[in-house]
Length: 106
Image (spheres, rainbow, N blue to C red):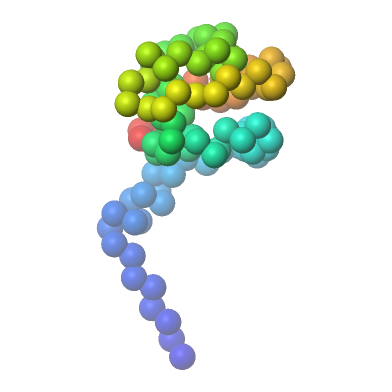
């Protein structure tokens, strides 16, 4: 029996554009439940990380926003819950990775 898989051009392009999250960052994003509301390259409940990177926040500013979100920065999105449980060293790693996405397309 031969099974043929059919993909639309959009599906193939979407798979090719998908951003690979490094394993260490993926673990942090899972540990702190970030992936419940965010994806690297697509809007979920919150903005895509590539869209956050386009705002050109510094790493320190992203960390501050993790702890004290400013809903006015993201109109059209529900307010983010303050994530004060994320240690600063982990928040800085996440922030640096987000900023590394500045040249990626969403």
